[in-house]
Image (cartoon, rainbow, N blue to C red; front, side):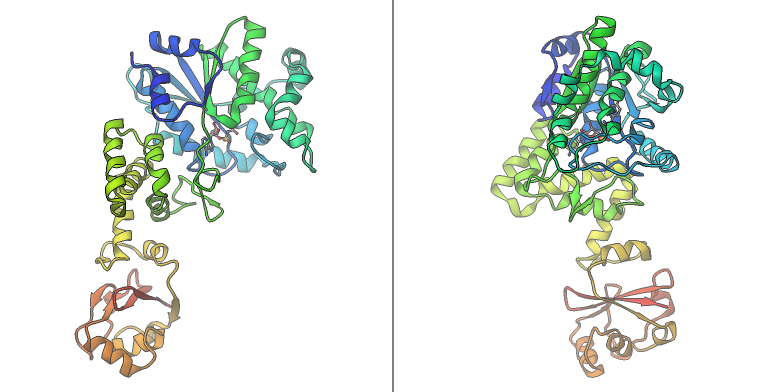
Length: 423
Ligand code: YSA
């Protein structure tokens, strides 16, 4: 049996375990492991992928995996790693977010595995019927205030100006009880999470020890940060999400394509399943030919394919190629609007575009200052409509040049684009 702890260590996915015994157990028997995801948004974000990759490695090494979605905990809000209390989510939002997160998880875990299919559970299912008084008597009684106050997630917040509410303070009890519940119901004996989850995970291992007299294990993964120390998955202050409705496939692909040379090898180990020897070859190439960015390309390819499928990857790559002058056929207007989001755009009436001379449209759109400049541009072979060179100064914009009937892309020379939205 390949030892999953060793696999995680080799790939830079191991921060800490609650006991060295875990590694011994992982090498000798099938374990059941869980990781939890709170539905704070409609989609998981790139940072959460790290924990999902951890679960995938467990499953690939023959263990049973459980992904827990926090229908209950999401309504409380995990204070771990947060500098301020978040507004409470209402039930409707939590339900919508849960559905999105389930969908994300289905891309990664094998729910059809013949011997150890992955399972998704929702902790709202057991907290819903748990009376508060019973919970305090059964569970709360086993928590010591000193230990609870000593958790990093609590200490940092207590020192802050805004402090912490009792609601958030009690979060660790809920996560601890989940571990106990999954231990009882499924024999789950390992909880995995990012290193910000250490306090919550150890609250669970302590509770199982106290109430069942059994040792269960925690394992944490280092929080992946970018070079600037920012938690991974933020792009210009915004999270990079797995759902295309929140982060377009193109932006998702570009985010990974743009990672720094200093980060790419580490990220290949974390976010892909490529064998380490193959990743070493990228490291060697990075040392001799960094300008090729082959590691970044492979990283973006692997992760986009996994999250958005082969079709999504092809679409992202074709979109990227459009910026380098490649043909646009087959790409729809929404896709092109994403690609050209940073390009100047204007809106012209349909009658000012369709069947009108390119010279006129290029001038009206602001690509050229005057008709004579537009004419010269065409004569010099530097004018393009939808990346097709215009060779005739008298050419008109045909109706079928309009992409989805509402967009054309003009270009002057190699790089200067102008987007025309057709009203
Ligand atoms: C866990 C167990 C339970 O029984 C109940 C709830 C939970 C959810 C947990 N308290 C939580 O809030 N997790 S999370 O939704 O914020 O993140 C999901 C996982 O992604 C966590 O393990 C977190 O550490 C991990 N993660 C997020 N950003 C990360 C990261 N891991 C590594 N690097 C990052 N940048």
